[in-house]
Image (tube, helix red, strand yellow):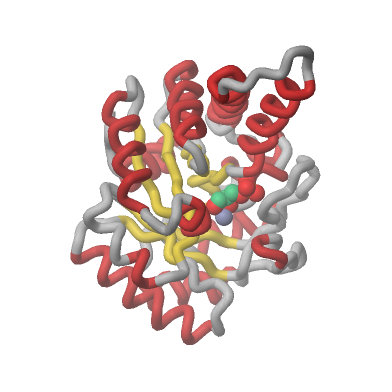
Length: 280
Ligand code: G3H
Ligand code: ZN
């Protein structure tokens, strides 16, 4: 069933659980994410990034419509979130494309500019009943901006949330986007400090590189929305590669996309159960 991201995140925060948010590229990603969530009976957030919209020829509505139908047909609560939006014109398409939430990403801009454009984005979103996530302290690794040492300052985060009115805050605490190995070490003390100073749910980006025990630790210290992308693509592409490298490689894409979809569903089911268990 289709619900809003705000509902999923609020319920997870109240229960001390993580809310799993997974990036969609192809239709099979979305089908796999929902299949994995249904298998373990957990709510799930389907995310579409600005980069993925670019892959779909810059047209957000066709893929969003498909995601909306997948969410509506699901046996578990599913929400649609537009992720890492830096382009205001794409932000403004959120309202009538079926998303209940958006991450407006001004994290690479100077602080005062980040505050000003994010305040405007949050006001715009709230006038339309949308939930808005923003980021302070760039999470390294995206598009070559690899900066694993970046950290969000708890006092600056407190002022930022007060000044912008955002509903959730993505913070830099040691994870890095697009890691293909799970060896990121999170700064759990910093997460705990951020939890004390920031009155809205905290969001972990680059979660594919974080081992299970650190995910549990992050949730135990106050992280709520947990974003995964690369972990799914590792499973998806690995499965396709195996099928195509095997005997009698098929021509019909269904033969390898079916295997990819099953592999992604397995990863999602596992990660969603990890997010249940906070560790102190
Ligand atoms: O916003 C999406 C996430 O931060 C995905 O990061 O691909 O490193 O898991 P990841
Ligand atoms: Zn991210």
